[in-house]
Length: 572
Image (cartoon, rainbow, N blue to C red; front, side):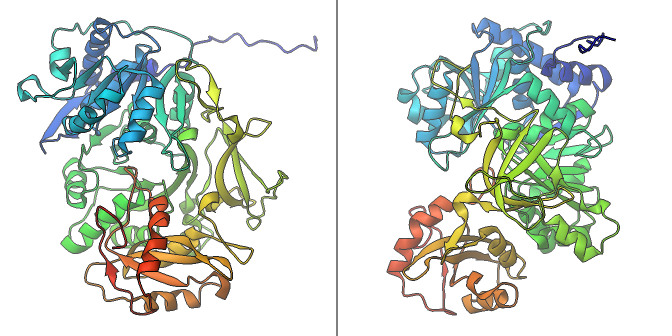
């Protein structure tokens, strides 16, 4: 027998998003897709009709002289039109570039120019923003407004056309092309919290593999029996891949439109459409939980919710499970990972007590198939996976980026290789531990760790303990300067409505739970915390204002008043 490897004789078909579309069209054309529109009405369609309209859009894109490889931007909510754009743009060979509309105008301008977007599809309510930055985005050739022709919205945007006007004359006959699976499919920029946003350019291959990873039964495992509600926005890392994984599985999709943070609407949607699975950041589920507790209503159809983006409070998971029978599954991922990295299915540990399983749920879970993880110390040496020793978290996998979108005008070049080690593993910027069973615990973002007297204090641990207090809705922990120790922890918290909890109460809450040197020195109450559009607390804004606040306020333990959040500052 020859020592050379033998080549298999199997068909070699490219992995293309087109095939997710065709599979759903063949196997579940009548499955429903429900959207809440900007007008608050419900729009109902099917996979079959969605993909018929996607063909019309693909033909319309050709009429606009849009070619393979062109970047087509969107600034839109979770609805049926955005879903059509996802598939029509990528499957015709162009690149769907979803833009987070809640970034600053300067960041949005930079992203549009860096990506060299040629056309931009936008919801009506983002037109004023685009009109403001129009002189600074000269390369955008035209705008498609996601509205009906009869809406008749007036805009100063050049070459603006209503979406339905664009689609109306187009044929619904279109042959989806075949091209290399490494071709770019979509583009998403990181939030830019440490410098300019960086572009992560997904391929058809990575997207299809990520979809398969999500739909394994040991992973998220959607099925045709599910009704799926992605509350995570479609402008953020492809809504965690749900538009693809739901279609591959044939699941019913419920899209909440611009009402993603409305607990009352979410409860109504879940009840009306019998939603079984939801995806969103903890802030979303806290809003839903608050509405359920104050209204006395229920979510009987809901089986499980997936949450990520930031650590999920233990009391959120415990309350949903005990009072409403809803299983909360902790996810961890990044834009750079497409985004699934790990998931926590603690319910499989039947050998543990309820409290032990709840402790386990607070971890980020084990890696999905296709994701590898390792830890390194600050000099690059491997850290053992013993569940105790922290290190910098590195990952690699089928759907992990090998770099970032490079110089303007050359989308095939990558930059910022300093984010990867010499073997090509991505440095996530997280500090973490991994135990012998593979469970990951994110200790903190490297930039969020508090270093006091040479010892590291986890902001996540302080936040989770604060949110375990029955009177605290949300909390953030940051470092404040200290002459003796360098830095000391400060907790910024949001009370439950009607609560009379004061600073000393929360400081006392910590005392029997942490060593003395880890205890926060101060607690400040605010009416709300600043969030990104994806639900993460904007700690950079907290840090930028806390020095001024502390200088201007004589802060006495036990007597901290609740501070209002104003447009000009948090601590006013």
